[in-house]
Image (tube, rainbow, N blue to C red; front, side, top):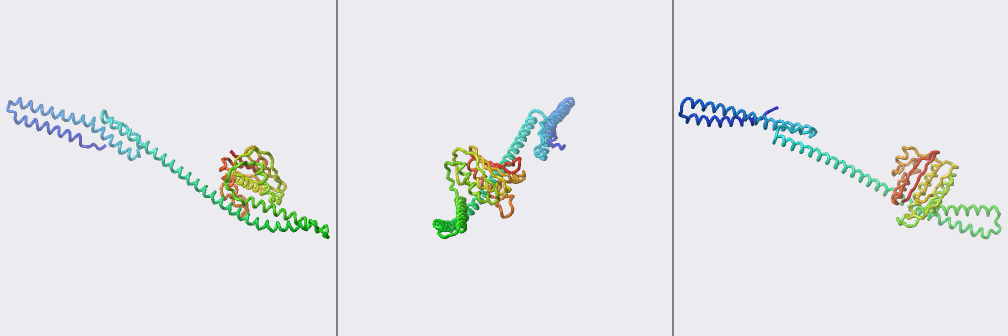
Length: 354
């Protein structure tokens, strides 16, 4: 441990002062040799006392200060991880306590700063994720609106000739005249198919009608049956039955948006179902459960089920937007949309409102 020369300097100054005073006194003394001997003894005692005072200062002041200085350098090298041990007595000890208190404050302030930085980073990441999610939902809704408008335009174009066909066939069937029974039956088949075209185009028009976000009285049973009507054609083509069960009280919500949610759920259930199975919509108070008897949901699929652009369908059959948009709509209504894997196979989606 390197010791500074403070104690040595103090002792030298004391000795020089005493020696100088004694030499002056000795030179001015004109007494006997005994008096001069007394002066020399006094000088020697004074030098001893000066040396003793220097040693006391070194032990009580200089050494504690040296240890405090060494601890301060070591503490800085260890990034304030090692506690500051007070040493010495009186003022040096108080100085050590003050330095330890200062170290604790520095450590506490540094930890608080780290905590605040971590919290700030977490908030920034959370806000960034929320912004990205909002942008994805906006993109998904814009795409859905564009598809709906396109479907509405196509439905208008198809509905007009279908109406003409129905009108003309109706006029002929009102007065069949000399038409054979076979021709009449063929015309009735044409009329039924034209009515089917009209029903399909009507469903497309309802699907393409944009929601204005207006909230009002909603009957979940009526919304569920409307969504089933929209998906009935595809269900018939796949030989899948659609069943609506239960009733619910009148709720407040956006009927068109909720219809879009249930249509997406029913359509997905139909596409996941095998021929001859049934898709069931069970209505109970403020919730609707859509169950199918399809292939079911694996844990890795359920983890990403409501993420935009995630789909398990083959290329060209799905965009991965339906469930993400449906989840956002239900969330905007203050509800939840959850998926469950059925024990006997298939999937179950539950939309809860309020």
